[in-house]
Length: 250
Image 1: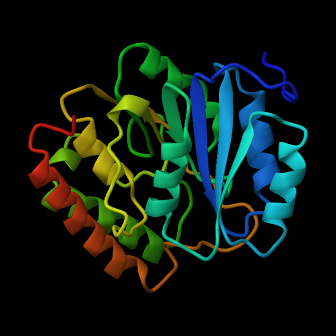
Image 2: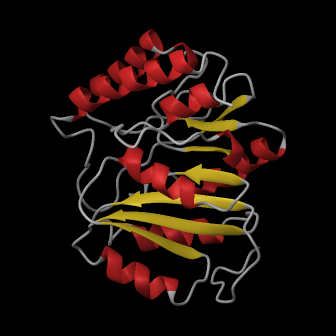
């Protein structure tokens, strides 16, 4: 079992875990501790914060002083998760990258199975709510309709999304060399749509996970009235990206 609190500078990590945050002070300590408890390769924790005002940044500074694996990427003002996660990936040093939420809805216990698939040669591993053993968890009717509608829309408009059961999952892992930087003007919430294009033809796997109830705080995406408008624009962006990279991004 890895040391849960590494204080000495380490060699370049094998794994980079990227979390985008905005006012997650109550949830972030739980998520980071759960990640540290997993049996994982040498890792770094990259937290991209978008102007939190609830003490998240102060917590990150305190943690970074005692854990050399923790790195902060600070951004003033809110930006969509697509941009924030992209910034974290560009800062990543690991051969493998995991993107997950910081609100306790993505269980860190799934990480070892995702890394196992990468070790087996996968280019992209999607944590899915809809393969055997997975579950979308408890959700309201409205949220279920919104989520399933987004999935069907993605599959209808994006060829690369049709081969996976959960193309709008926010929990995934991939080889760092798969990633192609996106247009800085692109906005959205679902980076996986673009990664499905990038990894096409290189090996995509799915592992099950149960979508857990959010910890403290309210959803910042799916309960927002702006989500659908931004998501549809994002699918169009991903479709253009797919058109410009018909064989998968190289």
